[in-house]
Amino acid sequence: MQTASDEMRDFASRRSELLLELSSCTVAAVALWIVAGRLDVAVPELKALFLALLVAFGVGVQNLVPHVIPVLAFRCPRCTMLFHAAADRLSVRACAHCGLRVRGSDSPRS
Image 1: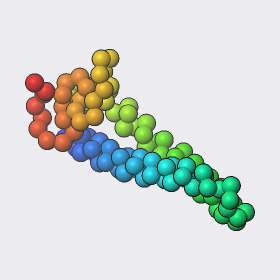
Image 2: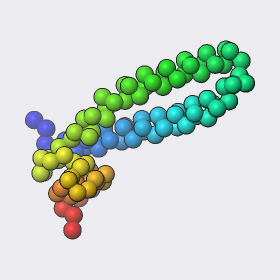
Image 3: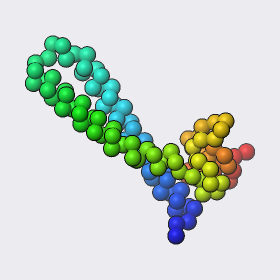
């Protein structure tokens, strides 16, 4: 059986990995967009390479989605509500309901 602190460490690890994956996907998307603007003067081989890279990016994003869902659907071990979302606000660093922090102290928000 997993304790609440183990659960939070696992959640923090998943969030960190997801942040790295999302940032790399964002950089790749911007790079593909910039290159796409210059394809009209490129040789056919470069256009084929761009298409292959675009397909690889799509597959990467498709594989990212199953990692996003558990992070967004994570329930706080203290209050059992969705960690990141409340009816009135979104939270990134602490539970949107009870204030339990991902890392650090276990005290509620003031």
